[in-house]
Amino acid sequence: MIRYFAYCQGDILLTTEGNIPFGLEPPVMLKEWNYVTTLNAGDIEIKVIRLDNSVIGEEGLQMMPLRKTFHILSAEDYQLAGKCAELVYFHQNNRFCGVCGGEMRWQTEISKQCKECGKELWPSLATAIIVRVRRGDEILMVHAHTFRDRHYGLVAGFVETGETLEECVQREVWEETHLRITNIRYFASQPWPYPSGLMIGFTADYLSGELQLQKAELSDGGWYSKDNLPYLPDPSSIAYRLIMDWVNSKFRCKIHKKRQ
Image 1 (cartoon, rainbow, N blue to C red):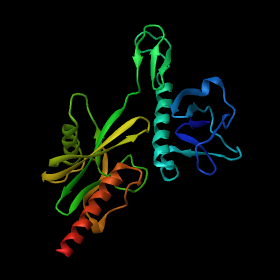
Image 2 (cartoon, rainbow, N blue to C red; image 1 turned 60 degrees about the vertical axis):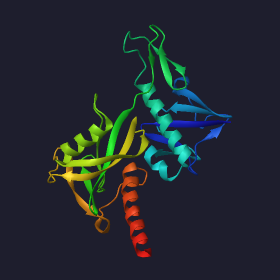
Image 3 (cartoon, helix red, strand yellow; image 1 turned 120 degrees about the vertical axis):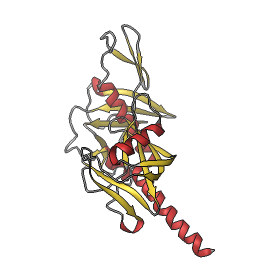
């Protein structure tokens, strides 16, 4: 049995029931160059496919933005779909060698090698941090210009060459809000295949400073308590998990106090 993970410009091909297509034959007519790579998952073969055009009007099939599949696919399939999407991006952006200009060919399931000079290449990740900053009974939430809706998130940014993750957390909070923080702690990480990111979540405590938003990146922001939270990020994001972890921990603390 073969499962087909097929993509076109950020959308993934699903059945109308919301499943990954499978079978001995591909769900749509394909040309040889549409096949990107093949993965093996036990007894199941996975074909990663780049579509030239979106599939429209095909009975039993639909195209859907990858991010929306979080609410449809199983957690395992959603993460696998993200990995396959990153391999499509890697393939499209690494056709030729950056050293000699030779053709890059697949060497393993997830790596390429130049057929001329032998240079090996693996998919690169853009590493970013995201941090929940707490001050007493409040947390810092911000709205960035890049957000496509009215939700508020947390301070985030990309790690720069030569800095640690903790240094990046401190720098991003300072640059975006002019606040100093302390007690930086790792929370969790999340693959973020839009197109090839890794989000690393942290928690921290407010130390000092007056809130001054970096207007070039943030349109609004402030301190929010559990009782006046703004519109929250999508549940698929680690930002949502960080916020809800804080909300639920406060709730658990209140229950514990009542029982004492």
